[in-house]
Length: 251
Ligand SMILES: C[S@@+](CC[C@H](N)C(=O)[O-])C[C@H]1O[C@@H](n2cnc3c(N)ncnc32)[C@H](O)[C@@H]1O
Image (cartoon, rainbow, N blue to C red; front, side, top):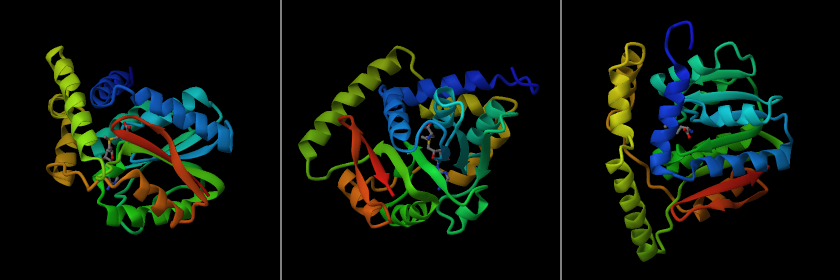
């Protein structure tokens, strides 16, 4: 329990449960992500946790690699409050408030380059044009020999019947979990809005984001091609589920 009286760990756990309602294999993708970090840059990496939310990647990173360091970047004041509360006093971790759509966001970072830039379930909020611009910036942030990984929803428009069947099957499982008490995004935020510490930053985040709108979620082929055009010598899928993919690019 932190000095403020807020139990940050329980917020982390409820965030994890809410995200797992959408992605039951969320922990598996984090594991594979860290396997590839270890394989390519070793167990003491300097990491940028991009669109970090509550710092879920940073948390798994430091538990597995205590010699790692992490910079978390996000725009959401409520999720960043949970992240900052959780890692308070840990000098391996820093958080930066920035909008990834701002041309100058990289100037706010404490380091000019990183061994690994990691992101999950976030960049689908951006449309392909700003996302391509962001990939160009990430190409400049990763050091030579370093890596970028993105685990996210990526849609192949060439397979509409597979997509529709997969979506219906996934949503049926989500409906069953909801009936059994799982908390979704809207409900989780409704609880945060009533919390004495998170109410103000939650109101602020809704003022910033408004009603959340997804981007166009381009295919894995688009991500691979755009990363190659952004200074990465190699890029390919290293993990996939029926709905999501994780792309790894090495500079
Ligand atoms: C679903 S959360 C995922 C957070 C975390 N990566 C995880 O796996 O739990 C998506 C995150 O992307 C962040 N995000 C979306 N657009 C952003 C932008 N333009 N700038 C900074 N962060 C952004 C949101 O604030 C949110 O924290």
